[in-house]
Length: 361
Image (cartoon, rainbow, N blue to C red):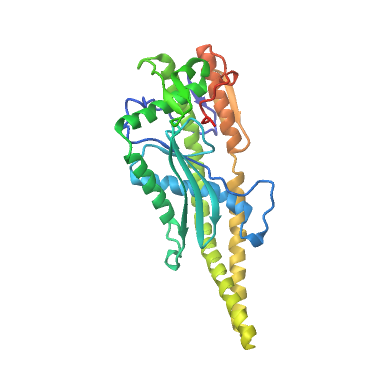
């Protein structure tokens, strides 16, 4: 099958590498799922609660990019990608929910699993910003220690596994993806349930043409994800300076509010009033904070709504992916599964009751 991109479409390049045989088993690929913002879509959060929904939703896409770059810099992993959602695509999957994110503190509830369904980490991470963390250096983050701790725990969990266990994770990842593509053809290769939810029952032959097609389709899905990842990276870099400044002002404003409350209580006891110059300085500090917040909200809106259509043509058929990135990804996955089924003369994946993309409950 040949793939040709239309004018203005995303440029893709295809590299077929057998993931089970050609890569260092220790360099597992990692998927960092877009964080749960911790803010319901249909619930209005009062500003007094210190949560700004549009900014929080942008953070849910911004922070995974920060973690992805840190994991890449360690050199201890294979390809690290930011994913629109979880599933059967990754060998190691990182999922997190934002519990708190202000200029003073950040808390994440993190769960890390591998392709066999085993849980590597499940804990809360927290970091408190210090005065020395601001101004934020370019390319850094005031809560970088949180991500360093998470990266260290992730590496320690991997280092505690045997070489055979690492190979099994990679093989199960491939067969889960194959079973997700075509349960009729590949579901019997895996068993589900128990302490290790996914276990290999058998492996296909090394030169099995069906598994080669599976890897080719998976590479096409990787390529789309890589484009989405690059888009998130560009938006991250555009947002970074304003976001860092907003965090700094948010911290200063919180400290000022706390200090002001204490001083106000003291003045009531002592019967003293602040000077006009001090009041004016406080006003300008708050005004600057509000301007930064408004600027960040504008960037956040663009981050959350960024949707560039994707055009692809194959075998004389044109596919135009539109809508949100989540919708485009779901549509692209559906197209790939349809292509695979047509090539192999197999039923579509949706016709089976077995689902190896989602861990059994």
